[in-house]
Length: 439
Image 1 (tube, rainbow, N blue to C red):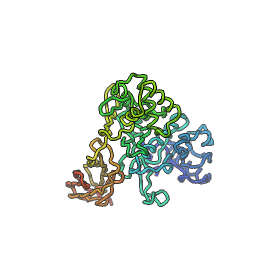
Image 2: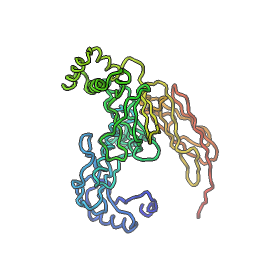
Image 3: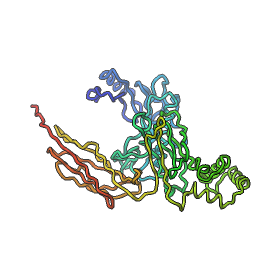
Image 4: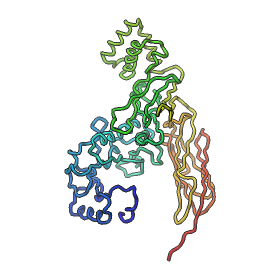
């Protein structure tokens, strides 16, 4: 493997231990020496679940699954490696600690993304970690122990066809190239216990994210506590912002006091409202001559959002004072298929060529319709073959297939359709070349 791949610039080190194996000094002394002999330019390592095991390689690689949503994102170097002078690499994190299906609730999928953020943030902040590999990139078929009754491992930040879960946006937002803006919630209160969305994570590499409600400016979102990241997630924990001033005409002091009470009622519920907010609410009613019905009306209008017109939330990512990306969330029943092929020009030489086809069901705002668990049909005609079933369930509104060449040059057309949705066609061009036979 080393001789075959050592010219690839993407390789950063060689693993010379069997994954998560016990120490075996006799064997691993030999494998470490052989790796250095075959490629003196790269360091060696080996994936462990053991703390302070024998370190015969250059880098101590450790599967750190210690974060459970409440604990620190990563273990300290002094608690993991026997030699603090050597580099420490987190070779796996998250994974089985929080398997996440594409059709899980928005709250579950957001928590997966935030767990990845916390581990990355801890690794960045410590200054003691050489790097951090999240487990894992995409869902995959597996053995009975890691499956969810269906022998599929749902540890990925993407599904098996590379359709993104919200956690993928956390990673995408850490680069400084193309604008990234992803809201980890549909903002549909019916998808949350008690209609309370809680804090909503927004992943972006922009300078700021501005929130609008039915085109009225609400607030500028603040950053999360993951400040060691190049681009920490934004947090939406205030859906009222300036609206009490701009829409109700309240003075700033009155608006600030009432906003705090209303947001607390939304977070804790009226029955569970902490004493300090109950006292503040009583003060506001006396100070501003408000009735309980007045408070209920404000709650329904600015927190509950029940019974009125559909609420349309708009998130604008702003870079250097200019809006570079925008996301809208609003209730919708108008769905469509999004079909993306990894390539539409295929070439067969000494082996067949193949294109991956990703399918998502989206609303008119581009929000994934995770409830649209529809059968999706694939029909292919022309000079190619379908590598996969003709019908697949859109798990969490997502699925896919593959198209492969069959030794002929020409054209092929893939038609993707689902009940009630407009079909989508993808056209492929196939070329071939003669293969030289060597005796």
